[in-house]
Every structure is written in structure tokens, then in C-alpha cells.
Amino acid sequence: MAAHLSFKEREDFTRRLKASLRKVGLNPSSPTQLLRACNSVNESIKISLSTVHKWLLGDALPDTRNMEIVAKVCQVCPYWLRTGSPQEADDHQSEGRDRPPTTADGLRI
Image 1 (cartoon, rainbow, N blue to C red):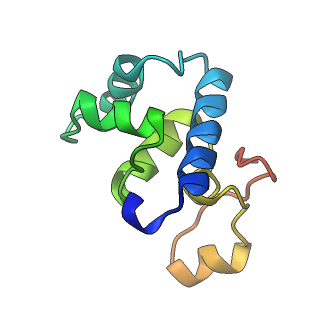
Image 2: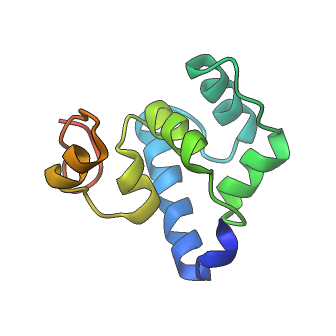
């Protein structure tokens, strides 16, 4: 996924991820804390510590399933975490999912 993104896009994702982790009381410098939090959300995931470390460095982004899990840990919208933009309500309806609306900084309302 990161191959399709510019350095700035990956850097911006990492900035949003770290800020979101701070807001929920997790250390953004600790891939272990993020991995444990992801495991507590979904115990069936198979993510390596090195993968989580790459997310925190901006070397890679989570795939769609893992982005959902990371966003849940961070208590933000996955779309915002990925793009930095709030997702429009129409986008949620077109996906056939009921998701709560979010503020401009990705926090769920």
C-alpha cells in the first residue's frame, strides 16, 4: 500500500496516528503498546511488531482491515486516519455501513 503513496502522505498518516495515540493515552514511540492495543480489539489478527513499527515510522500503512482496528484503538474514523479528511455521510451510506459521523480531526461524534 505504501508504494502508491508519496512520502508526504505516509508522513502525514504517521503524524495523525501518533497524535491519536497520545489522545488515548498510548505512547506513540512504542510499537509494542500499539500492537497490544490492536490485539485487545481483535485477538485473531496476525500483525508483527516490525509491521507496527513501520506504521509508526511512516514506512508503511495498515491494510484496510488493520486500519479499521488501529482506528478503533485510536477512537477515530479509519478514513480520517488514512487521509486526514472527514468522510462524508454519503460515503458511509454507499458502503452500506452505518458509521458514526466524525469531526474534522477524525474523532467520532
